Length: 306
Image (cartoon, rainbow, N blue to C red):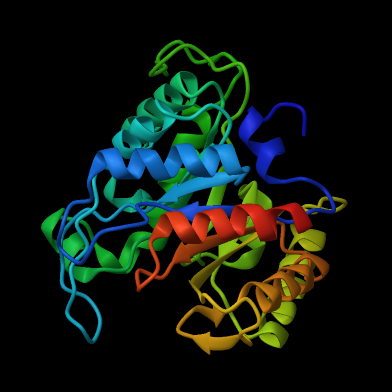
């Protein structure tokens, strides 16, 4: 569509699969990542031709999972602004802003500012959140977050609209942007696929076994046929990736992703493209290999094949 910012066309290319990266790509549980190192990784990803840099919104440091680990992540908008300052082309994406815990006008102000200073490079991914402790601390109701998500989405969509506001009492947070910031639904957001197909500009979901993912994408297309006839909105998939040194190592499943060598990875990505996945978001495994080595291998051996 012609009214989107430049980020949309760079990440969603008809007939192609693009690749993004979750940031930060280094660091351990409970520890803040060195900003200089994160900016080095961002510059390298930009130079190598990756499509997007993503970050999560984790409001509170709450122990999670069997390992009882905590994530210490900076504010997503400020974090992406720091990456925008050292990059030129690569898109900046949120995956995802916990919309029920944020006022939509605050989200609009931050999104419009980041999109402006990055020259149209923002994709705004939005989710409903699922941590009871966060909702309790923010004084929000976990059980009604689906309703609040829809209400905040509507208000945010209006605040981000390029067109002037007709109601004189509906004050804008900033002047109207020249192009729309894409609003992506991340996960189910506790909404039906039909609602997402009607209101979101793309849908981001999780890694699944290939036959299950094929069925999920078919349901996504069916929902669009019902609510947005004639349109094919992009499908985004996240993948936990443990890229092995041995390029010929076969792929094996890990939680929400793959442990594999690059040859099997290239074949997997081609199958995903054929299924209709528009963008793959890699969350790199923090193991023995430095993130820079993995980035260079992906950039030199995988991206050119796509």
